Amino acid sequence: MSKFRISHGALAVGVLVVCAGVLTAMNVATHHAIRERRLGSWTLVAEWRNYAVGGIRTGPDSAAVTLVEFADYGCPPCRHLTPLLHDAVARFPQSVALVVHEIPFEGPESDSAAAGAYCAMDEGRFPQYEAAVVTTEQLSSLSITEYAKRAGIRDLHAFLTCIGSKRVMQALALDKAKATQLGVHTTPLLLINDKEFAIPPDPLTEAISRELEKKKERR
Image (spheres, rainbow, N blue to C red):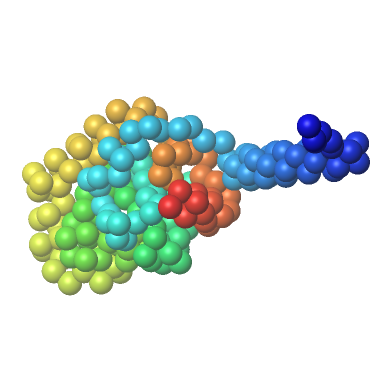
């Protein structure tokens, strides 16, 4: 009967190869974990798709990554975040979409600006409207009519009529209901697919790129 023997040298090499593979996997996992922590702490939202419908959408329905923002135009951090979100959609036009839920906490001016956003969407001028609103020093710096003019909205009478319409009030009520369901108490609050960020990750584009990488790995 022949005997199968493994030399001590071969055994040692085999053990080293296995250990090297384990260490490589551990290093990759650790690297990903460090990146996630550096990009900001987040909470998993299993039902995140419920919040990716309704609101004001920019970008494709088939987007691999959906950014969902709960925002108030009177909130300085929201005003800082808004251009970054639109830049992200512009950078990944086929892969990233933005859904904005208007949550006006700051008073009557925020209420009017939030309603104006839905009316600007009707005119196909939502990104321009948001750009006009957030680039002033304060929300109260200009009237809602002036913001509409800066956004390139031509029919100002229709715009102002739209602001007080029942349809827009219902849309804002739905945004508020979604915020209540998610437990939103402050703005901005941002979802990147199933991750909820109370403090938006910095840099934002790196967090989005990470989500796109994950989508590719799952295919």
